[in-house]
Length: 398
Ligand code: GMT
Image 1 (cartoon, rainbow, N blue to C red):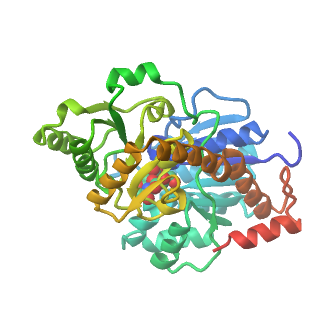
Image 2: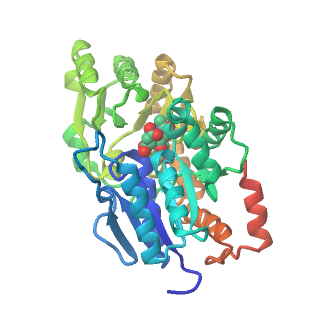
Image 3: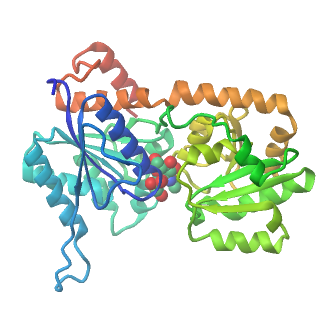
């Protein structure tokens, strides 16, 4: 391994949502660059697939000794992080989601030594929900202060972190990304005919159907749209609000127009079926699915919550309206669906914006630059003492 190739431990929630997806995809991109990447998680990250070159997986096993009322996962994770870091001579741990990962990483660092650096990426509810929870607030604050570098996935999340936890240390903006080799407009003509007629537009919602996604607003928007033009709604994913949504669809007499698919493996193919993505969330620090849609040329109509406006350029790659304004969102969706020229222009703008602002290589390099700086060691293309890197770092600190 070249001297500027790093040994990186990555911890994330392996089965849960966007933070796990981003952590896994980042690990894969880093491994492609020749870095040695060790995933240290409680199960195999679902996006990891087969083990590529330079990727290693270490499973955290939790003791269930009968004395314990709650199995001590956090302690087992800290212990495993320290063991792997020592044995594999890791340079740094990059942990995604503050609780408990950043806290465990700090404990591991105390066990291993100061040379082990900690990079913490904040994703959303670790701050916006747990940061407000009195039982965890001080611990999250401690973990953020103790990390060697802290990143967040939007300006909005940086601002929330400062406000909620009174944090003054630098927090770097590092947006989420998609791999353009996976997320691109797929040819899905045949599959689309199975769920929508040629004269019907297809609206899509993909989520974990938690209350924060406001799935009832999705149904409400669709109900308004289909009153004015022929359309279908595709619901993809599972979660606590799905049954409620199905009941509402039934009550409104829309069952024949709503297709429910549950979880899907090939998200890019599913997105490519759609004319518009609906994302009317109550809160979204970034909204990874809107980026996945953007990369497939599908505009988003949704709320202007949290970090969504940093991702979706209102009027260029979609339309954003205030949270709960289902009438405004339905009007915006109709405007887009009724005007093929406008839709085509937005589709093009989506593809350009996804590629230029949220490409995997760009964001991977931003993380490499951070690693390089905390380690005081060069990384490919980013010598830590170069004035360019220092200037960029300065510009990104908030
Ligand atoms: O924070 C959560 O509720 C879960 C987390 C996840 O793992 O999907 O979602 C957050 O992180 C994603 C990846 O950075 C962002 O795309 C989501 O917007 C964010 N969710 C919220 O802020 C509610």
